[in-house]
Length: 118
Image (tube, rainbow, N blue to C red; front, top):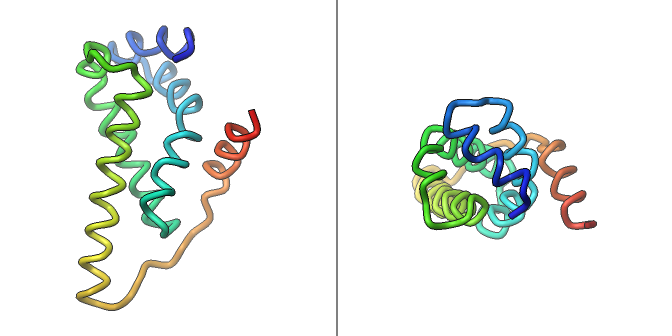
């Protein structure tokens, strides 16, 4: 974990939205790559990541007090949301045999590409 990420954890736990935005910017690429391994639908992937980061924001205090690093804790949250999203989609697909239209995730893809190229 980088020192900037570590420094932003306490600030985000205190409700600092700017600090959380910096955490998001630093962790969205690995979060995207992890969730993409589990969820293959781009629209569902966007929903999964949004819900994971909303949960992280809401639980920032427990995140700051966790024995896990911030990035590890966040990846656990992303993984849980990804599996839940995939399982829900599979259940809906079996019931309706239709899938959701796939919108572009340009910002997330660009962040992932930058992260992989480092």
